[in-house]
Amino acid sequence: MPKRSLTIAGHHTSLALEPDFWLGLEAMAESRAMPLAALIREIDEAREAPNLSSAVRVAVLRWYQRADRNG
Image 1 (tube, rainbow, N blue to C red):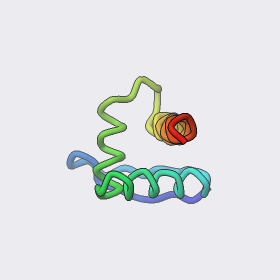
Image 2 (image 1 turned 45 degrees about the horizontal axis):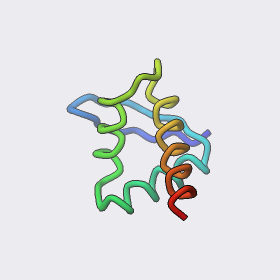
Image 3 (image 1 turned 120 degrees about the horizontal axis):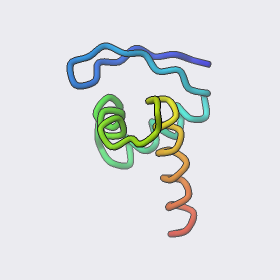
Image 4 (image 1 turned 90 degrees about the vertical axis):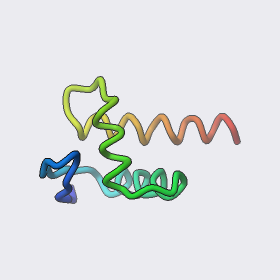
């Protein structure tokens, strides 16, 4: 899995996701006109999942589900 290093809220971290989730996350950020790190910080602050990688995957999945319903 590709891993990227980020700074989120002043903390250095790395995030490993499957390539399709990276693509989805980049599409989410682009659709919201925000930097990828800002989107990840937002997901991190709102997460209920035990780790950031899981929270990001769930956020991407929900974003695609909403897009599919709104067709």
